[in-house]
Image (cartoon, rainbow, N blue to C red; front, top):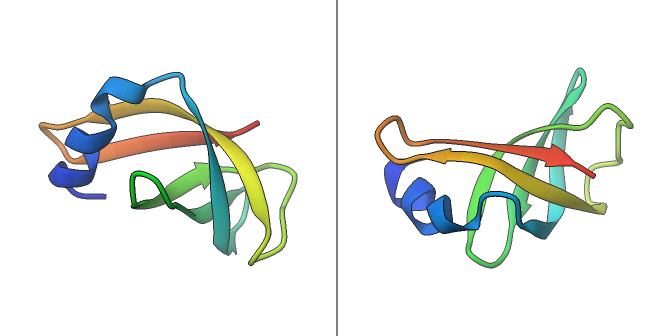
Length: 73
């Protein structure tokens, strides 16, 4: 996640988004939110299948570090 994506999302902390699962890594998934376009790691303990669409909530967006955190709902 870069600073531009973090800046686009910074006003949306707490908001829910549909996200496509790109890949799984243990209890995390790499997801892509379509609007605004962003790709990030997401806590996903239910292990969704790659290609599936899940709902995520934006936990944080830090412009200074360019980091964004989502959680699956």
